Length: 458
Image 1 (cartoon, rainbow, N blue to C red):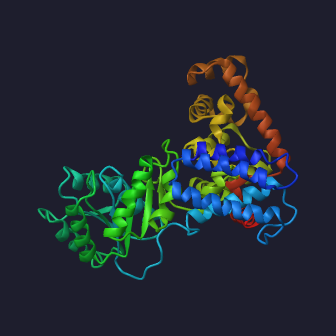
Image 2 (cartoon, rainbow, N blue to C red):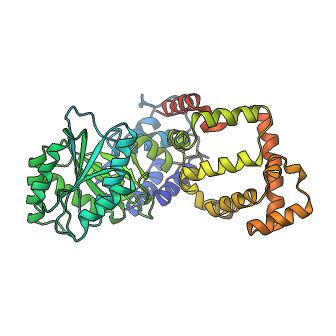
Image 3 (cartoon, one colour):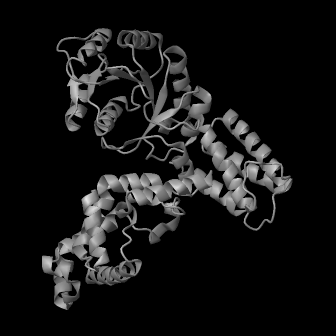
């Protein structure tokens, strides 16, 4: 989503690498490029003006030696990166995402928004996320006007093994919302209400939402915004906040080619934090919004903490320890390599994962040098076409075996040769590393190191 903006900003930072100090001239030149980059990313023009003014003030203070919040000895490019990073985090309100603590039981979460923003899918994603946090969510729909809206929520609920409350024959939105009062008696501690939406904002919709809000005594009212609609999503969020009261925003479709302006504008314009970010079509594609991590990714610094979390979710602790022991004893085989490829694919699209690595954010700029999911599939197919003995002892694979493996995997002998050569190189590298298994095997140690990296950037 932020590829274009991130690329433009990183080019600005590169322009400072030959400079020995900050001057009013090079600061203003950089600010012109930053302003253009933000406006082209569809950031609200008032937000851009305020942002540029704050960066200018801090950069001028750094140039004259009056700044006390920057470490001494930083190069001009590092000073500018630090200032831009801090101010971008401030744009997001510097508030961690997710749900704020609440003592209410059951906790009622209203999902608000226009039709087509993704409220029903978000209800399923949020229910799945709450389940992973040890909660017991109940889903209910109050959208009685859109055809099949209630059935759509039932389908989403079945897909995520989530309970959906669907009182038969009850077609009054407020009455359906009141029915969630039974949630506590049924053993549910959270209720997610999928409210009605329209193609535009009207008085009838707002009156209905106010009535549902009062009937449920909701503690959370999350506005679901389609990031692809840019500033229209920000304006709609402002209208809903003024008339219903919004406590947070859920940005959907962040995996699309949106320019990022909605994400960078919504907190400043609407005045509420971004709670969750949704990307992808599966129910696992929702995560709390972490401003520092997003900004680090945009500026090419990577997002190691999120990468660790994805790795921990894809690879069990026992599997990581088993893998570490095999590497230590130099017993890492093609079968283990295939299992690792499967784990990587569980973590999400390869482009997204690479974007979390420092310096690898603009993956598309690497063009043909970067692996993709299709290439990973071909590697898996080659390894799967081998016999168990060949996967454990790749040195027995002679010419005739290579031809058989190529035919079985639908690839060429050249691709089989290339894989075997790269695997031998990998084995030598792992042996030299002496058991370092990376993010998944590092566990708490890797997380502590990543947290220290973040603290050092502040």
